[in-house]
Image (cartoon, rainbow, N blue to C red; front, top):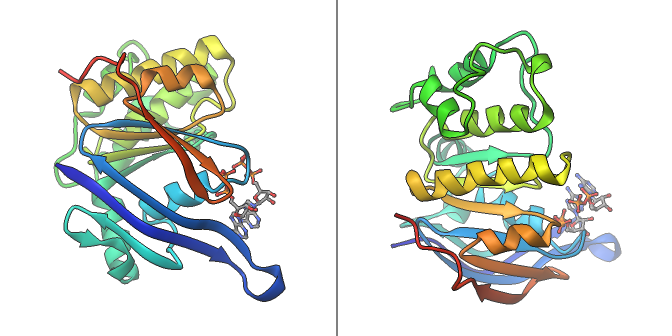
Length: 229
Ligand code: ADP
Ligand code: ADP
């Protein structure tokens, strides 16, 4: 089933001579349960694209359908509801609350969700079953990022949007974070998008999309990746 159908999406920041054309007409169909990696140089539009998919920003023109809902038609309240119910975000920086344990950081989200996971279950999914009562300062960078991922999945979003999730980590630690995303995609079936500069990450994806100057300039599927269970 098609989770996203993107057509002729454009985004322009500002106007007149200072206008920045961040997206110049992007088309993309995404099936539910796929894992996508977005590659491309800095400034090519990857974050802008992910922010529009996640309802954090609005397109200038074109369509972005999430199932039958056209995100470009939603008002601010509709977009907020979409974001809350359907989208999990993971960023380069973890933004955990220092005075709360891993479990409590995840609980903040599950308390306001309709059908949340048990926080301990979400933390086990990312391999942190032995760290649930630790504070962020007692965890490594990679572990903190995995808490952030547990927080993002605990509300059972349909899609997980990750903007440079390993950008602040060394490569060995980054691999464990990526393994957690891979496991979530396979075991829960969450659709996952990952922006990365790391070409190794691309091997883990079903699909690799290359951005260049506000457009998708290449899309390759990865026949080597095993299908989700
Ligand atoms: P990357 O996403 O590749 O790390 P950056 O975040 O450094 O790239 O941003 C790339 C470019 O986008 C920079 O030139 C930066 O000034 C510009 N940029 C990013 N966010 C904004 C913003 N909110 N307002 C204006 N320019 C921005
Ligand atoms: P990437 O994620 O591939 O690095 P971005 O989507 O961050 O690319 O940026 C695409 C272009 O849009 C860049 O030229 C950047 O400077 C510009 N841009 C991004 N965000 C803003 C913003 N809030 N205001 C103005 N320009 C922006």
